[in-house]
Structures are given as C-alpha cells and as structure tokens.
Amino acid sequence: MEIEAFITNLPKVELHIHIEGTLTPELRWQLGHKNGIALPFDSFEELEASYRPDPDDERIGADGLARFLKQYFGGLEVLRTASDFYELGMRYFRSAAAMNVRHAEVFFDPQAHTERGVPIAEVMQGLQDAQGQAKQELGMTCDYILCFLRSMSAESAEEIYDLCQPYRHTMFCGVGLDGAEAGRPPLLFRSIFERAARDGLKVTSHCDFAQPNTHEHIKQCASTICGTGLDRIDHGLSAADSRELIEMIKNNDIGMTLCPNAYNRRWSDHEVYPLIRRLFDADIKITINSDDPTYMNDKWIVHNMQMVRDRCPFSDVEMIQLAKNAIDICWASPARKKQLMDELFRYQDRMISGKTPACKVVEISGLVPLPSLT
Ligand code: HPA
Ligand code: ZN
Image (tube, rainbow, N blue to C red; front, side, top):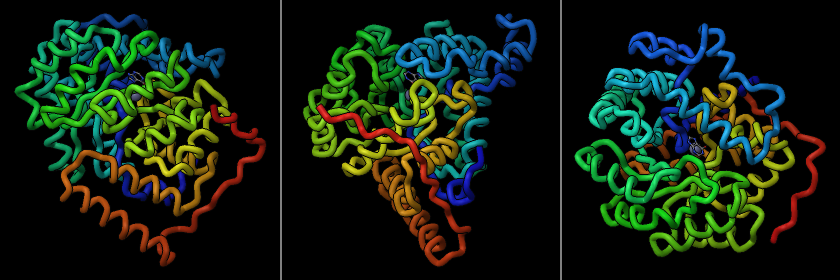
C-alpha cells in the first residue's frame, strides 16, 4: 500500500492503539526464547504465518472480534519482566516516531498480565521507562490508558485499579474498557468509571463495530455513565446508523477513535466508509487510529489514514481536520496541546504555500448508498 508523503509527514496523534497489539512475531519469538517459554509453533516461520490472515477469514463479520482476541491473548504469554514491557513499548514508540506520531495515548491491559502471575510492578516499570525514553530520545509524548477487561468482573476492575494507584499520577491519564463485548455492557462498569472520573482521570470505553446490542452500549457511554457520558468512545462506528446517537454524541461533545482497517478486515468498503463519512459530516470529532497493527495485517496509523483518504474519500483540508480532532480530544496538558496544534498549523501553512508535494484525492466508484438512519 502506497502512503502519500502528505500523510506520512502530517504531525499525528494516535489515540487508539493497544501496546499488546504491537507485539511483532520477531519480538514474541525472541522473548519466548529468553524467558524459556515454549511457543505453540515449531518454527519462526510458522509463528509469522499465524499473524497473516487466512484468506478464508476475510470478511468474517461479527465473529472476527472473538477470533482476533484469541490471537491477541495468545501472544501475551512471552511478556514477563519489566525489560520485556520496556522493549515492547520502545519498539512501538520508535515506529510511531518514524510515522511522525507526535503524541500517543496507549491502552494496556494490566489484568491480562497479573492474571498470568506477572507482578504489576514489572508491567508498570517497563512501560513507564519506555514512556520516559520516548520523550527523551524521540521527542514524542505519550500517556497510557489503563483498560479493564470486560470479560472479567467489576470487582476485578476495582482490584486492578487499586493496585495501579501508586502509578496514577505519573503513568496513566485515563481508564478504558476492552476485550470480548458480547453480553458485557459498559454499564456493568459504571461504578469504577465514575470513581476514576472523580479521581480526575479521563474515561473511555470500546464499543466495537456491529457487536450485539451495540446501540444500547453506545448510548450508555454517550449519556448514562458519568451523567453526560464518557470523554471518548473507542470505535462506536455503529452510532452512524442512528440519528439519536449521532445527536447525543455531538451534543455531549464525545470524541470517537476509529480504526478503519479493523472494520475493513471484517466488512467491505461500502459497509464501513460511508459510515465514517457520515460521522465526520455530522461534525463529530472522529479520529483515525490503528488498534492492533501487528495482528491486523501490519497496518499502522498511516495506512489507516490513507484508507479513509482514498475511500471516504477525504480532501486535504478534511485530513487536516481529522488531525485537529485528535489534538482536540486528546488528554495531553493544555500547553502540550497548544504545541501540537501550532505544529499542525505550520504544516498546514507549508502545504497551502505549495512546499509539500501535491496531494491527490482518489475517487472510489461503486460505493452503494448509505444505509438509512433508524
Ligand atoms: N476490541 C476489543 N478489545 C480489544 C481490542 C479491540 O479492538 N484490541 C485489543 N483488545
Ligand atoms: Zn481497540
């Protein structure tokens, strides 16, 4: 996939990436050996092949989330020590910096590690060291979002939140909710979300695309929890089918972190891009992100941006608006946000004065009409 220089050079903010979803086959193999963990693969080539999509799995629809999560949780076993988490973090931050990501807010799943017997201090120390090193070595800022696993109980979420308290002021800026969604509405976690909000943390939740009861889940995040909803919704693309949800998200000024490639692996272009376009046209602050790049055909933020660029399609000005949205809804300090916005304005000015290579807008033919609003 060819990425335009305009997209590579655009100063970017990444708001939806799971650090565990950046584990490459190479690092998994290496850490497996280092930690003496027998991987369920006979060779590196076999492990690498497991990351590549099976052609029969294309367009696997709603079942895709469960299949993906099996792979994702399978990969975690090699992560044991602070240095493993550091290595995982730094590899991501170096790739991100190479794509001109200037600020990232990165999910991590502490329960998935403590459940395996990894002490929380190993997880936090490694990730925190990577955060500091990224700033020093790469000049990019990053923060973490502590995700609760929705397959686990609300009590377990409270326990992990308590365990992470010593790191609250230095290492994470918000809490989130991820994992298997069916039958696990966000409302089950209302109490911990509201507690975190009272503690001054930001709050977000996954509402994966086309999951059972997705409209109800989105509604809980957009209005019920925390009074007027959470600060952001991760995915939530199915809101585009509902006039009521579009209004609610817009009126409550909730940002949305979309990951087009994650949907496009499971649904076709015409099921995905018109919905993204509709949210954008409704003036909802959507952003474009990468989710779990190594498990999703190695598509990173630049690929996701190119996909919406070509397939929505979005003009230069609209692409810049997406980048502005991400700065607007990110949780960095006001001073850092201003720096990011100034950098983006400088880029915009250079582009307007013609110093950045001209940008094409590719027309996609054959998009079917939008599904009607309910
Ligand atoms: N959805 C739900 N849980 C996840 C995801 C996702 O996209 N990535 C990692 N955990
Ligand atoms: Zn995600």
